[in-house]
Image (tube, rainbow, N blue to C red):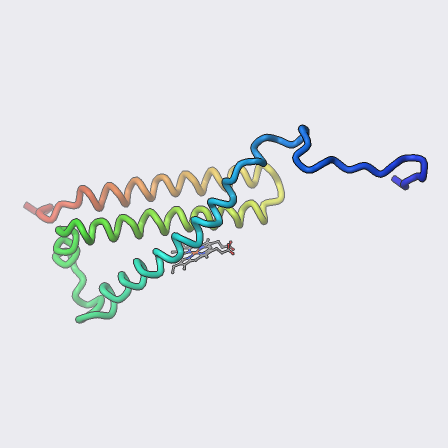
Length: 141
Ligand code: HEM
């Protein structure tokens, strides 16, 4: 529509009452901060994991059931693996949430992709946490 000189050009004031209240939350700020902090922690956790499992001693050749059982007998390594699982899963999910928000064109596509993502996150966190805490080194007995 062409602008006429009789009609003044008006624009809503920022944060006018017409804005949905949800926009005022700081969720995206904390999510941005979380990506940086979890990224920093993941550098330590993932590089340590890589070094221990694949490089030191005989690397991957020494990994078997006994090796895993020995490692998870220690609460330190249980906690290490638990932190790596939770941080990588939530970091990856939050990253993909951003990708979906950026690229999904239809509201329904965006909604269902995110539902699929969140469902997979909950399942993987539940199964992974369950395994770390209920692992039985005497499973064959
Ligand atoms: C060495 C460990 C890691 C570091 C330092 C790291 C760092 C980061 C940072 C800073 C961002 C935000 C980028 C931005 O906002 O522009 C990011 C995004 C992302 N990360 Fe990581 N990350 C690490 C590991 C992982 C892992 C293990 C996964 C998968 C499970 C992952 C998946 C993602 C995804 C999907 C994004 C979103 C990408 C995008 O916005 O285009 N990252 N990462």
